[in-house]
Image (cartoon, rainbow, N blue to C red; front, side, top):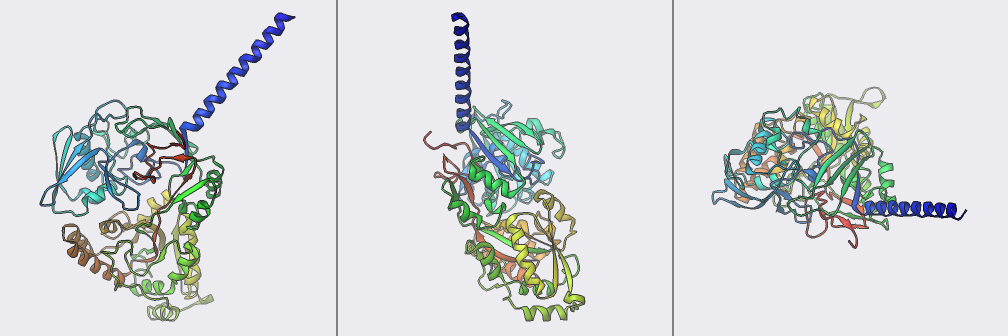
Length: 523
């Protein structure tokens, strides 16, 4: 009997030990596993090739030469390049690379990878295609030096290399000789970043594990997990409850801009919201009637009360747009290129003169407007009210974000509302305006004079010369009105749980979604 009791006691004690070990393991995992969200599944991890929701997650597994921080000054900081110099004529950039950098498969990273990637972005018309067209040659005098010479002076070159994660350096030994569009590594990435790709469970989770040989130092986190949560309300509740620890993208993409204030007042959350050159706008398909008529586009601009839109959508978080560029870049902003004032009577008169009288039910024509994200959806509903007053019947077509971006260049829409950065260097605005670029294609817009003016500004180191070119562009935009800015200077915010620290928004500042320093408070 005693022997049996002893065996039972031993079994109980063993079970208790196992449970204690499991509990300790789970507690440790809770301390070294960070959970974030994504609103949709990743379709490609190769962000050098095309946009995807992997945009910011890509900073976990890839590095760039340089990166722009998301602190209040938006400084260009070292990444794979530990330092650099610019030649006196402003055309040659010499980057000195970090040493002892390894790809996740153990192969050494060298200058040949940089040269191959930048040339590949041009060959395969990747996201930074416009930037790479300014490059005349790339030299690699040794494995740790890259010399990039531009065709002409490009005053925006360094900022454009740094501002977005669209120039990640790819492993030459795994991509050379392949078609970037079909390379299987697009879904199983190999990079140099602080975390290695682990697993992708379609429609559910994506996980990365710590890179113990990361050249900037081993991260604290053992694992980073992204949960795919399409529903905005579910994602917001998960952040508040602690099921997830941060939003990957700004919270205003999960709801109204006022969500910034709602989350920031939560006792366990913090929202960092630096002002930015973020502009929300309504863009037309200028090739499709009746929006191929400048007077119709101007009438739409007059029919929208931008003060009302900004008050109702942002509650003062942003500024109502007053011009065709952003006030957030004051040296380039033209105070005189003012958008037309809100004037329903004049808008109606313009539409009458353009041959669009009110018909049955008081409707002049319909507008098929596309949107994909929370703030844009809310904005569209307010704009629909305004346009209804002048007889324009708007249909709001809600699409999944990645699908909308892929479909817009097909020009099946009448208009769309979106928000993008138009800075900090105004050459970023070229992506939204110059012929055949990423965000000019969805408007079907092209003006060779505008293209030339952007080139003139880019090719000058004289700030006044650049300003004159940008002022002229703003005045052309005012005349041709391919889009109507609605509100701007909005924060590009970041929301996270307070029990974690070391975020890229903490000093010293880093680029968005650099998680290499994140750890629980007190660790």
